[in-house]
Amino acid sequence: RLHIKGGKIVNDDMILDGDVYIEDGIIRQVGKDLTIPGGTKTIEAKGKLVIPGGIDVSTHFQLPLPSGIRSADDFYTGTRAAVAGGTTMIVDCVLDTTCSPLEAFEKWKSWADEKVCCDYGLQLAVTSFDPKTKEELETLVKEKGVNTFRAYLSMDSLMLSDVDFVHLLEVSKHLGALTTVHAENGLVIAENQKRIQALGITGPEGVLYSQPEEAEAEATLRAIVLANQVSTPLLVSPVMSKGAADVIVKKRNDGCVVFGEPTAASLGTDGSHYFNKCWAHAAAHVTSPPLSADPSTAGRLMDLLGWCPDTVLRCMQSPNSIAICHSMFLQYVLLVIPITSSQGTSHVVYNLGLFTMTGKMDACRFVAVTSTNAAKLFNMYPKKGRIQVGSDADVVIWDPKELVSISKKSHNSVSDFNIFEGLEVRGGPCCVVSHGHVVLEEGQLKVSEGSGRFVSLPPFSPHTFSCLFERERVFNGGVTPGKEGQTPYRAQNSPHTPYSPLTPSQQQFHTRGPTRSGGRNLQDSSFSLSGAQIDDSEGQRSGIRVHNPPGGRSSGIW
Image (tube, rainbow, N blue to C red; front, side, top):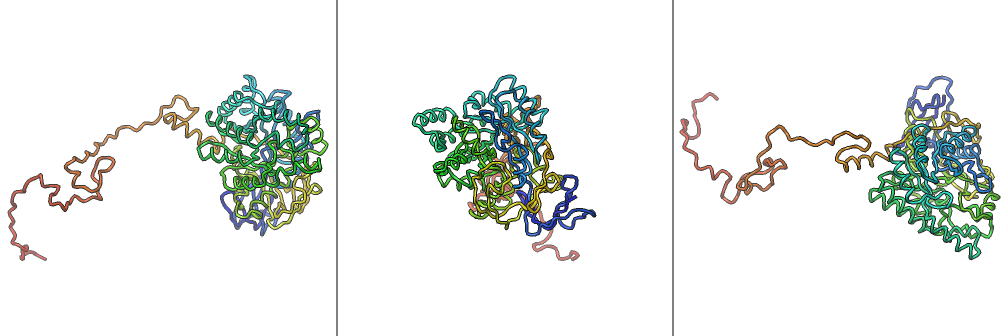
């Protein structure tokens, strides 16, 4: 039992002062003057924000890399760092080209169950497509709790052709899964890599030359167009350039159901680091797509994060050591993202959105981009991403006044580099509650391996599919997709006799037109100043004999 007292409770759509009572891993009461049982632990939150735990939907823990090495963080150290930064739910990417999708899923789940410190889900990267793949994807959705697939439009060993990508989109639509796409033009990048290698450029700066922003923007547009033709939702992840961001905004305005996922790295730094004289420093900033060399990109992406609906934040968590980076560059393999852990992600976004760039984001929007939007897209809402009665007790007490210096010495990842090294930020978690258990308090982490649980993600999230189904229902004449045998509703003729429309001779005496049913508008007058009146055609009435004298009778009873 846990009582969080006196905080400012923040959801994506409201802020209120009150208390939160937690029991058995579930939020039981929210508000003021709560009835709290005896023996309940109380945490004072006066002057602090009480927000839902963060959700990171794009992690790559324990990821096998070329030459048999793995990413620096496994599921224990990675989720431990995530919890320390206020993240209480992750969705890790299953990426294995050596086995079938089902085998890869079971392998990842066995790794994670033994080590995770917080709740987790899994998404599957589809690197090839055939009839067997289609059957296994259906099994993953219907029996294994997977509701999202990831496609790559670049990198030879992972890239799907446009034909296979369309097939994946069609299967995702049928199964109710969200398709996530890594959007870059793989053919352009491959040719550029050959060209710059021939010039002798093999250092970190090569990513800027081989992976131009227009390659990301073109692939983003192509992916959105294909998804719109299939009529299925799409999440572009990551979004690293202004060109890709502008494409997403334009297509959303055109009615496409597409969402963007900027990264903490693209918001907090830029591609100028690729030219740093220290090779290790430059290599540690390599991402795919690369960080933009345009210093105004971070501000543009923060604008997108601050106002574009349903935008989510990606940590881009696949931290690696400098030795791993060196091994990758010896082979010139730009396959993964040797980037920092998620521990500082919320710090950076809170600082940039609410302080350094004042006005681009409020507390509600901060909750939306770090938690609620992801919960909605992946159909976890409102169990995750909200503080309300019945939701999971994943809660963060955020101190908006805390001063934090981000450093590799203080982060909980095993990575030996942090791209935000030395950044002074304001605001951070002082207490983290995961599934009802206090896992961070007064700077002390209290986590244990395997304490997290697998969260099954149901298909057909209403926040992503409902508008598409409604659009197709209207297009198909009233039949909702998937509900065959139903005839569309058509209005029947009314049993009542309709109004007779006004005749032309009558209409000339009316300044207001008839109603849609053909009747006279009661706000109109039939009197005309022209001398002719509406009843002229009826002739003179016969005289009426009046028995009373002019002025009326005077003998009546008054």
